[in-house]
Length: 193
Image (tube, rainbow, N blue to C red; front, side, top):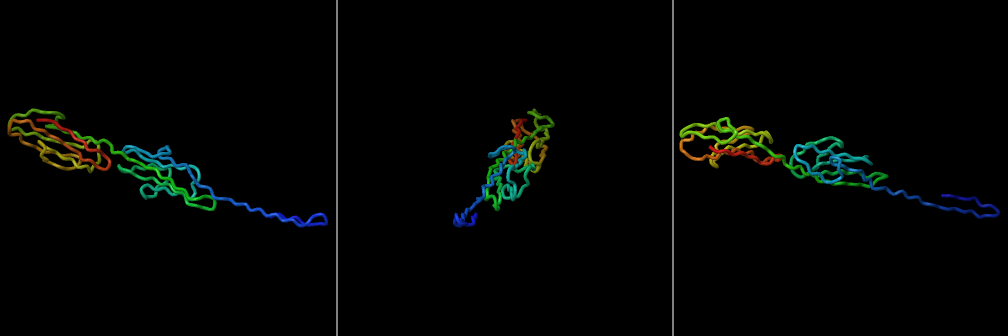
C-alpha cells in the first residue's frame, strides 16, 4: 500500500498492490542405490534410499515400514514399494514419490555325496552306502529332501543323510533337493549308484 499526500498541485493518491507467494512443489531427488528409477537387485544385495533437496518433514517407507535415509537395508525376495513423502508446509505443497524394488532370488546350491564321493559310484549286490546331502548356499532353514529313485527317504535342514542297503542289481537315482525359499531358488544334485 502506497499513499501520497495531497497538496495544492496534486490530489491524494493511494495505490494498493497485492503480493501472492504460492507454495512450490517440494520435489526432492530420490535415489535407490544411486539411481532415480525402479530397482532390481538379487538377494542378499542391500538397498539404499538417499534424498537430496528439500528434506523437511520427509518420510521414507518401504512396504509401509519407516526407514532412515542413507542407510543400507537387506530386504527379502519379492516386490517392494519404496515411498518417499514430503508433508506440506507454508512454502511447499505435499509431494510423494513411489519406486518399485524387486529383490530377485539368489541361486541356491547343494552338494550330494555317495559314500563320501561327490559323483556316481558302483556297489556290489547287498552293499550299504551312506547317502548325504548338504546345503552349500541358501537359507539355513531351507528344507532339504533326499530321494532314492524318486521316493523320499529323509528330510531336514542344512544336511540330510541315510544309510541304505542295495540288495538288487539295478541303477539307483539319488537326488538331494533344497526347496525354494523367499530368498533362494530351488537347487538339486543327482548321482547314480
